[in-house]
Image (cartoon, rainbow, N blue to C red; front, side, top):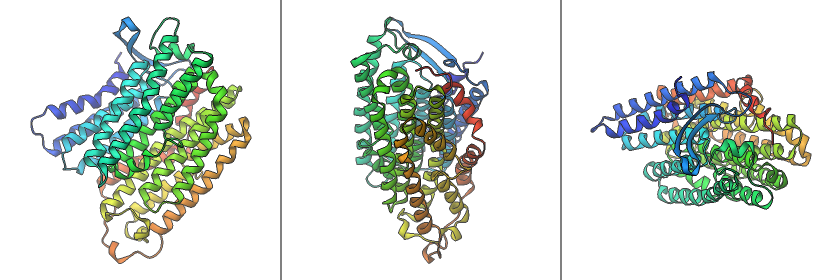
Length: 489
């Protein structure tokens, strides 16, 4: 049988190495190899999706000896929590490479960094070994740092350094937690399946490990008050960097919150659940108000990510606090679906904002007006993505947020105040639509071109999946629920 997970994981890296080994390839050759590599990776992810997952533990597991003396091995596999994120990664990286195919400024290095980042992203979601997870988790920072520093906007060096220092220092507590889990295991191992089946730490040791994990994942998500690196990184990053940062890399934090904090220290998480829940509620509401205050479209979309990731924290906390398996499954179904849908919706929004910036060289909403008449395809695409982001029924965020709020109401009813975030985000996007796309068009934008075929190919798949997930969420939820309904915490 083909090692599907490993093939899917390393195909982008093979593409990157091939591009770097070619002597003086043209930009066209570089982009063609990158798109073919990403397309084959998507085929691999779809094959993994068709194989599916079992309800009990991990599926499609592949394992090789690596450092047997310390119990570390190359272990990869998927369950219903990680498989949707693997599929999301494959889709987002493919459309990102399609969008980037017009780049002529050092395309070889740029595309190689994107492909390396794809391997680290899929590796983070499929790793079943503590060291392997940490390696993928950390190497991703290097690719994103060079993308922001090399191809970002005016203040890119400062933003890249801020991103790198924040996330690198933020990752160190996770390394300590991994070492603690290893030393606490009866038979020392880095096998994450063993840590999940029999959490090795108890009492104060488990609580300290949980605190260490929460610091790391709060930086990555990002949650209040460790979110300050996010707006600068998003605003200064190139468009593809923003898409990958919001669509994939923020999920490293929320995925870790479920995989490590909830599954490996469940009792400690239950004890600290209310505190984590409060951070989730505050993050969601703060992110919504901060987005409302923005005049820069890209910064606005960046802050909506703080809001949406706050809902995920609330959902995972509700899952930790409840003793009812059905409520726990509902909360986690919503949290994982929210990760998936946020990648689609925010990815589309960042693409569209990037397209506006390329045309107008500004992102200030007050500079526009009436763009719906000037660039209707771009405008209506933004309207659709904006309505999805504010949680309109029939679009991707609605079924995810509905389940999170439903589980929260059944666990800690007071926390359902977080639902106010939806109203504020609705106001935020309605204001953005009014100022940017409605009204009479300004003369200076009369010649603004509408979406090109390359741009349509980049953004259309995300919008189609946004509608498909909103109208028939069961195609994703069935996979997620198979795992969440069998979790024993």
